[in-house]
Image (cartoon, rainbow, N blue to C red; front, side, top):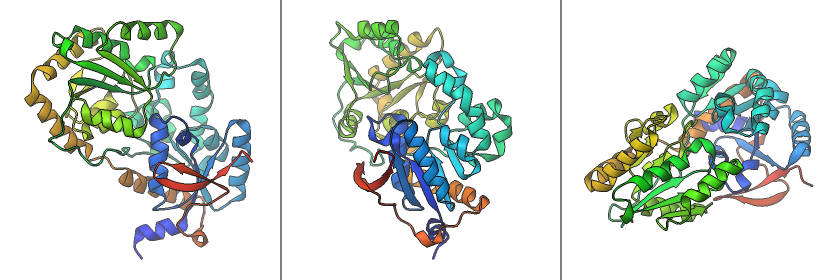
Length: 379
């Protein structure tokens, strides 16, 4: 039996999967993909529910299972309470780095719990070196237990090179202030060749003020070249990624940039901001514009260059596919399992009698292609 099988057979993990069952944005896609792939390495007891009752019942159930490790893909509550038996994923530090771009509730939540949760957790996983550096500056004491593990990629099969693409610029992501969607729209309408192209905006409305919502609605109204699709299913999103010609993502601050990885993997030439996480992910395989007062001007120039030059689009598309192949959910899950095992070993956990499977209790739900049952707080 190989080393990987020995690791998988030893550990039971309680995993918070709540984000996987709503309209999935970045964290939801992360949870769905990492848990599905973790099942190859550890036994998963998936937990979900709502409200304070979820936390109380979940924490009590976990404490009764003394051989387990808790995997928290976002929530700060469980690591704060469970301490060194919990592994916490920090996707970004934007609530504390750019608090004006978040709701008051989110700012307060992170202000109260982030330092406590990261100090008490047995292990911390971050998606990029940028997030690690941000976290260590914010909480220097945790530096030795932070591990950088790049996230995965759902678009692992590249599109056919013969696929016909429309003259379309695509944005995928939540509509919220730090994503700079108004700047993208203003840049698009300023492109001299823009009359022959469309701008497709995909993503649900997130937190925006009344003024920001009005600005967005005003920018997309009255111009039939700009189409706001709202939230799309995975199948519809895949179709958009495989039919557009350019991808543009001007986020002010990111932890990873999953839409960029998936766009590159789909053969789309990308225009990105100079946010450090996006630069790390793209690794020189995208056109870069600077955040700040000239972002509209520079984005207009980048879009113009790509619209005018099909050879440049093809070159960046090929390079993007090559770069996208470096990201794998199976590799990510394997490394996450290693962190979980390290925490389990350090806390004395040993669940060898349980085997490598998903705990089936008590009602069946579907999480993408993975079908399993959950421990639910709603009974």
